[in-house]
Image (cartoon, rainbow, N blue to C red; front, side, top):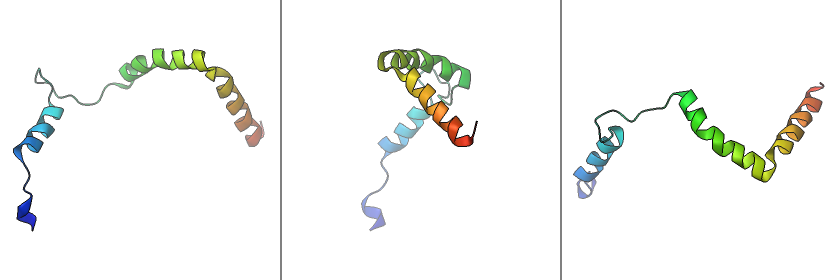
Length: 69
C-alpha cells in the first residue's frame, strides 16, 4: 500500500522553492532587530487604536501586586 501514493516531484520542487528565493539567496531567518523594526509600526498603531497601553499598565500592576511589590 505504500507504493500507491508516491511523493510527486511538485512537492519536492515546492520545498526547494520555499528555501531559495528568486535571486538564489536562501530565505532564512531575519535578524531580530529587523523583525522588531517591521513589527513596531503595526504594534504602535494597535496600541493607539484599541487603547492597549492602559491594558498593559493594568496587567503589569496586577502582576506586581501578586509578586508583592
